[in-house]
Length: 327
Image (cartoon, rainbow, N blue to C red; front, side, top):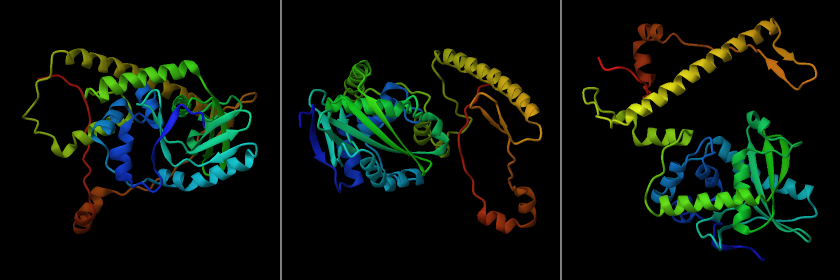
């Protein structure tokens, strides 16, 4: 195997604690790459930094992750059947770039073609609501998965990667991703900067707007630890500029929301009593469906059955950011 990568450790049978807090901290992996580039919608570079510097606690798999693991062998077998020209091997190793030691890879499959040489198989499961992000005609896949493939090709020094995906539990699709030298060059440089200037230097990157960063802040500063309102904190003077920036985005958001409501109402007017509308000559579909929800009058229930209410009532605390004026 003439790879630019070498085997770092055998991961078969490795417990999650060791995986998360020993080996995953050894470098930047494929699932970290889009966050380092700042294009992940659910994970920020600060999340990656915390994982590399402080480690991670093992988490119970949610349903999506559990079924992703369960479906992986089935999807791999389906890919084999679709590609008899390829040898498909499952990989049980963490790989490390020989040239860029901070780049590591955990791939779902190693491919081999007599003429094309080695390639990579990446296996995914996807929700039905993300179906629009996978376009077979144009070969478009979600941006974070594209970056993941390019990261793996950079680590191994190879030229092609297949992504096999099961969408909504019943739609099998596959996409071939080719090596993009410009993107790989950018990836290597950004990951190098992140690794040496942040992880090894112990300097956290700036917070961003991803769901992952928001979740991290909620974890670091939970509602149960909030100080009394009588103890305000003195913020630095430069906070005023940040407040101005926040308010400008807030106004733009309100303007956009207002325009969205107008357009939505016009669509409803056109739909009338129909629940589905089609636009001839296009692939547009408008749905104005009927939904039904049963609500409980909690005040009446508490009044009539106070003991039951007290027994089953739960209080969920969260934090909400708002701006105002000092009186």
